[in-house]
Image 1 (cartoon, rainbow, N blue to C red):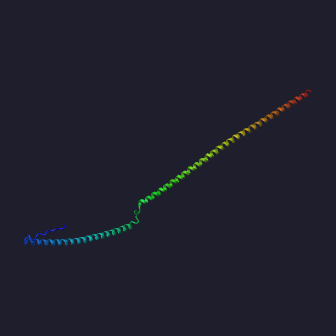
Image 2 (cartoon, rainbow, N blue to C red):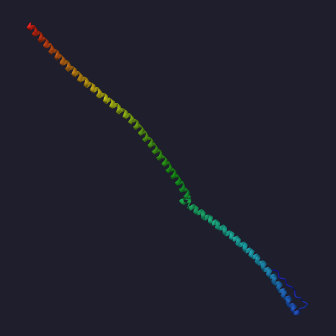
Length: 195
């Protein structure tokens, strides 16, 4: 804010008064000049101090960053063998996927084994059914053989019995014939004796 000073009219004032006003104006002028000089000096010092502070701040930031880098490098080197340096979630995910794939392969293998077992069982049943049919055929054939054997035995028995009957009949006929022969001979002998 500029101060505007109006100069009092010196013609109206007394000489003492004008001297005092002039002195005051001179002091004011000197004070303003000193104030301006002081403001300029203070502004210059403040600018230098601000630049120094900013330079120091930048330097401090650079030192802090370098220190952080060294500390990070040191900790990286110290923890390089740590299991926590890897992403445990990803490792766990990979392990989980591998276990899931293994379980799926095991499930498919069991399913394949079960399918093969079922097919083998079905083949055994089919063979057993066909064997059952064969067995039934064999049983039927055996039955017919047994029946045939019985029939043959019965025929042999009948034939034996017929032979025996025929033999007995032959014996009886021979005996009858012999008897008739004997009677005829007796009748002839008695007829010849009576004659």
